[in-house]
Amino acid sequence: MRVLLADDQTLVRTGFRLILGADGIDVVAEATDGTEAVEAVRRTRPDVVLMDVRMPRMDGLEATRRILTGAPGEPRVIILTTFDLDRYVYAALTAGASGFLLKDVTPEQLTAAVRTVRTGDALLAPAITRRLVQRFAGGEHRYGAGGEHRYGAGGEHRHGATDEGRYGAGGEHRHGATDEGRYGARSGGDTAALHRDLAPLTPRELEVLGLLARGLSNAELAGRLHLAEATVKTHVARVLAKLGLRDRVQAVIVAYETGLVSAGAHEAAPSAPEPVRGRPAP
Image (cartoon, rainbow, N blue to C red; front, side, top):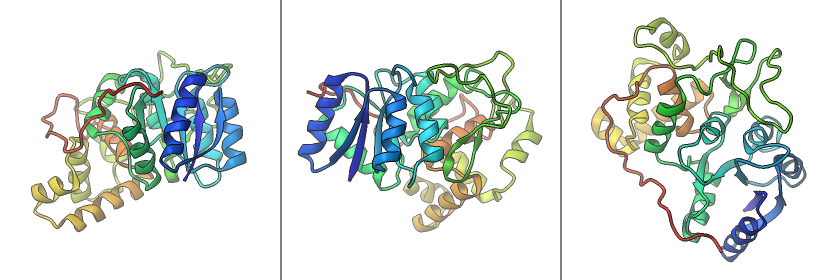
């Protein structure tokens, strides 16, 4: 497995490289900012990128967007952060990142996370994604006309031709006060927009998406819907394919941002444990 490390802190990169190397994971390149990360991905074609969210010249959000729209093989991106509720983390997830890690994870958690996303699975528990959406989907991360927020094939984050000025010098993401998003927060009565955004889904697939957004695992979905787990997996795969999403994390985001599931709605306890804080990496 080939991994690229992007972080402006030398100690963080060194510690992660030693941890990954001890578990047989090859660190093929390191970058100190987003610009270097984008160039290194194109040059080395890693399977997974560990991306710091705040770096000089170009931040992790813009670097993630560029990597996932132009890199051969579409590597999986894991965002590195100090805080689990961070608008930059949320923006990176909508741009196609497969999850995030707190920087004080244990060595075991780090290697497990890299292997998890390499297989195509999303990294973080739905409960954390819900908290991010509930905090930031109501208007703090929404794109204006000409640069609507879209998920294309493979889940990449695409900006329209007139999407100028959203990213300032250094790749900083700027939000306008009048921004609206294709998947912006919906009022409870905006059913026309809801049906338009989720029109490709069948009633059963809408039901699966709603329960998925509340944190149910495939096994729990199967029990709730009285279906075989293999059938549930098929439904989930079809939901992702029809909406052009990379993984379950983006599915949760879309369910909340379209209004299919509202903040404060009854939620089932997720089966996946949330990341815990461990000892700092050496």
